[in-house]
Length: 296
Image (tube, rainbow, N blue to C red; front, side):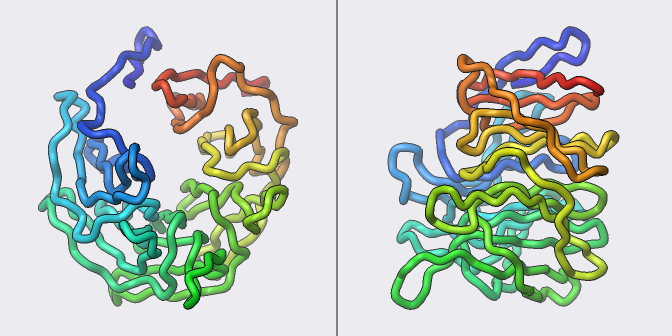
């Protein structure tokens, strides 16, 4: 989907050549979109190494250099220098990965980086303005094959190609967004049982290498909520994540508005973006909706 800035109308664009789940999409510095990882929608455990690059000017998808290792549910982030980091994930056997690869969109090449200290799937990643990236949360496997929540975050130093780990509150089924040169983690669960959703929104302090709570959600949101940052107003619009509602978090005050239900006909939100200071969400049918709030 693409929005006409003059009329505000949305129009369909070329579809991804093959359907998939568990993939990541990253906007490159030049405006192209890179799609990495994932698996076949009909067979969840068949991960892929295919990488596709979308050119919005030509409305075409081109095959890019494949991932060196097929994976899905990886953590992906565009770095400050324009490269794309892909960390962890799960292979076709269901085993979490510690492997990290970095894509250069200029040369269309992948380079292997140092492995994570903890293999994990379903983690999130975000870049740091001064270089490097942070990988947070997700699920690991112990020696008996049992799943556990990873209670360590990892910070990558690109100059030394080294990961440094630290303790953190475990989360999975959460999301990360970039704001003011660092990242926030939002939603998710602290346990595999229902009713253990995490309300606290945490911000990473790159200088202190530590996390602080900067706000609270009104509703518990796991299974991948959608979060849209409105940086000029320091607000965070959060939608979905099992809760079919929307709320606005004022990051200056650390408070959230009472949640409001999404229109029943809209269904589940799967993506979001900010355009001209407004938040938009997209559902599984590719339909977009603007979210309007008082005091905007």
